[in-house]
Image 1 (cartoon, rainbow, N blue to C red):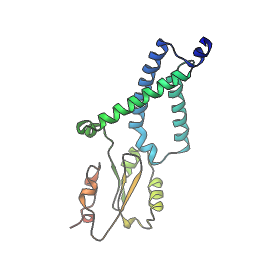
Image 2: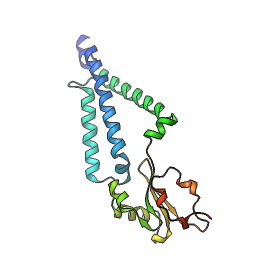
Image 3: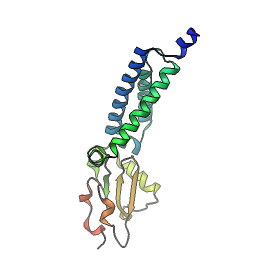
Image 4: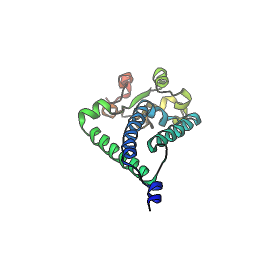
Length: 185
């Protein structure tokens, strides 16, 4: 029985090390995703996907230590669930959400792509044209705005005869660049 526990169990020092390394690696992963996640989700390249796979492998291997066991894996998973639940609960508080929540970003104001903003988020004009094609936009003049959402998706707002409701751009970084003639009168 002792031999079986050696294969699937975990010692107290190893358990403490698993909790500590899981916490540190989780916080590092959250930092990386906060910095690059929005851009990555908007237009992942093959290199981005390979980098994410390697990052996940390194993080997972580090959390489990030199000799992974069933108990160590379960402890790492439980630690991740607790950390994610705690972080989600903290993000629900308005002051923290305002300070640390991702913001939507204006990428195209009317027919004009905002090239410096695209570059800042690691996007190319061709990424913008691709999303417009996917949304069935045939002419730039049909576009009121393209917005990079906090989750990395791009929203395309089409021009309408009645104009945009200004509230639709509430909280969008760069919304002041919108041409006034696109809004409802």
